[in-house]
Image 1 (cartoon, helix red, strand yellow):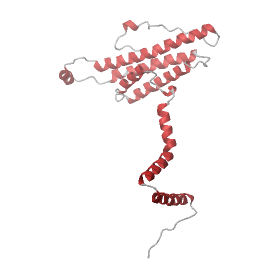
Image 2 (cartoon, helix red, strand yellow):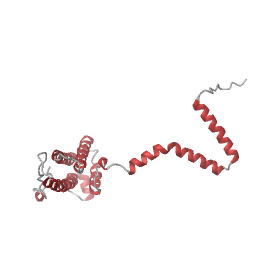
Image 3 (tube, rainbow, N blue to C red):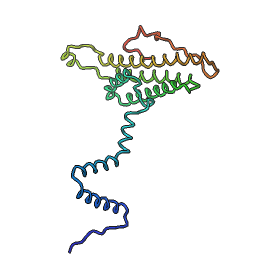
Length: 220
């Protein structure tokens, strides 16, 4: 004796599935295989359309405020710094978080609707310096290459990793400083056109006073 499974015909989902199967069988008997495959693909596409659209929309139209790269040069420098993440994941993540805070403040300052901007500018200066100082410390913690590596490549530079990290950090600081300087010009123009007690003129030296005398181990 064959025991057939019990079917609950009051289950709405089950009824929909049975109806679709019957419809599919009927359509397949009336149309060609190509049309049937096309019909199935359309159903699959419509089923996943919302999630697919959301992912594509997030990737293509990401808001600038979420983009820590800001420009191509900064993107390149941050990618170079990522190579040193394994030296100290904690410091790398800390440096990235500080850099994100810097970019967030920059986005705030670029908003013409922002009225009290001096505090945001000072915060941006602070986050820039702290972020770059954190990245600079990678050079101190990086393992110096062993003598056998120096012999192999005929390169006896004792502080190669330190110099490389220092160079990347200085260039990153220069990019951030240029952004701040250009913003200071714009904000000072606003202040001169409409001075008020809530803001003051921003004084930012350019180029930086110690720029010509910087060494590999300088911190900002």
